[in-house]
Length: 196
Image (cartoon, rainbow, N blue to C red):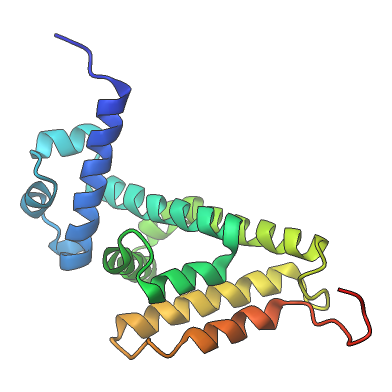
């Protein structure tokens, strides 16, 4: 039997994650049955669960994948850019990402085992935000009167609020000025006579 290349395995894993993302977003965790996952991915249950131990492992991998993508944006452009991308539908799968994010929130609230497993994975976004803020502070662009931990919590809370707002179907096309305010809140304000 010929060996399957790593590229083929990676492509198959990506196919499963992309299909599962749409399935979880559309049907929620409980409603994403194996049959629906098969339909969404175009693969058999054997192919799906060859790559992922069970449905929860698949969901965690999907949520982790989304968190990793967000962390990459945070590292390069900051957490407010993640929020702007959500509003502009500039992310790769905005509606599906939102559905996954909401399902993560629901499961965190209702499932202690999931909460424990997710805590290990969710730290990446927080670390990326903290590191970005530290670099901005070193460059003189971040206010220095508030601890970086507090600023990180503030930005993460703003993200969660935006996700909730969009999830409720409330109008979001006029929120850019709000995100400008969030961004301006963490910036350093220089005195008029201080050199830039």
